[in-house]
Image (cartoon, rainbow, N blue to C red; front, side, top):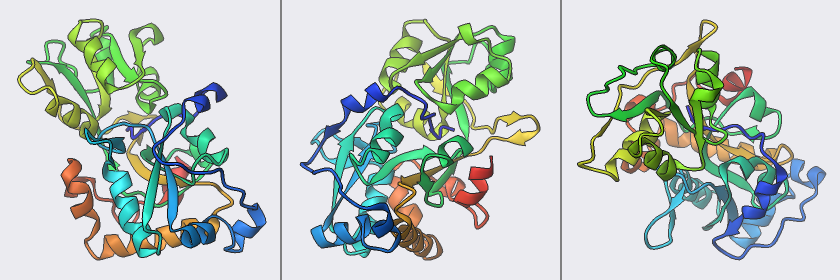
Length: 297
């Protein structure tokens, strides 16, 4: 769903927008060393810090009013890396479309942005098992005048649909009959909201979690979030699983992270970390929700 949640096929120029929240030099790790446990994980343990890339998208990874890096992914990263002996998590803000490029260019070591696992992305990075599984929804004017509850309704109503740049929702919409000229892209949630408010679009498509968070920032305004649903394309449900992404060479770091994540899940420690950001038991992954399964598509 997003779960983005968004596609990574963007121009390399996006990487120029990376803004470090804390000073961090580029990694000089060697791929073979990384496979043997002598690369990123060893360096992070030695230095006591690790860099994570985020896209400033609530509630996944963003900076709050005080400038602190927070969100479901950074807070989970802090908890897991602390148990791995890495006390400090430093943030590097990048446009969502530049996250995978930034990771592979070693601007940071992990993507902590609630990024959806897709077969396309699995070709470029190695995903952890998911920390959440989410459904789609729409933000619409109160009363939902165009009766939009799924992407097919957008096509039927000939409505203008707002999506975020690089978002999986754009692909869902197009495959389910929404004409390209009816799909309007926005750089971020606030600009999409302004587009809806100005009447340039009739609905915003995102995860229920994202839209609920966005609506909470505009209480009293004449909009609502529709019921969550799962798009079905070619007979297959399009569930979105958000996860952390690692460089493929960092097999030891990925394994250490996954092992701790599994402990959090089995010990009922995952939901309490994500709950303050609007996640519920309904979004918690099941035993069959693995990176390998979502990489299959």
